[in-house]
Length: 174
Image (cartoon, rainbow, N blue to C red; front, side, top):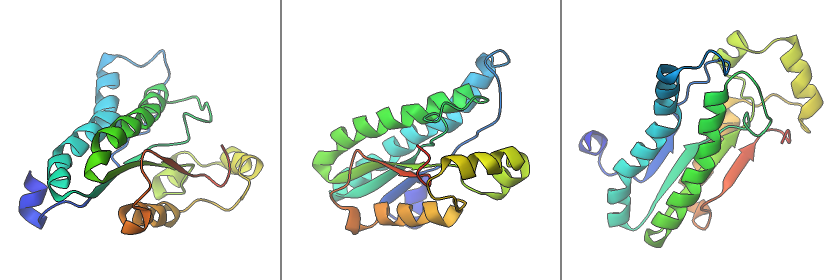
């Protein structure tokens, strides 16, 4: 594995490739399906597959797959993305059981609407701000640091008995 050759063995994988390109059911074709599923779920599966042998050999590791609450909220506008993010839960369950005997933890980190520059530039408007205020129990805006903090916990030995779980960071929206 190229990463191992460059930086040494892998103890933690954060599988965070994603593309939430907006599309409708009608405009989605096979090419878009393939492109978005490759990014949003296939990449997580094969990244986990690539690091698992090293983690198994070491008898420990943490795989953190990024999901999304978008599919849980029944959001329109990205049915392929929503399908992939729902599939993250199945992937985590399967890998947690398969890799658990080797003390490899596999969890989903499931963010709500994180205020990244991209989200603010492309999707956040007055209606979105109102939806956050109306739906989140804690109306503060979710920041990238909120997600990173949980990822650090899941990567650390402090989470040694957490596996097969879905850790939602959404201010209480779902």
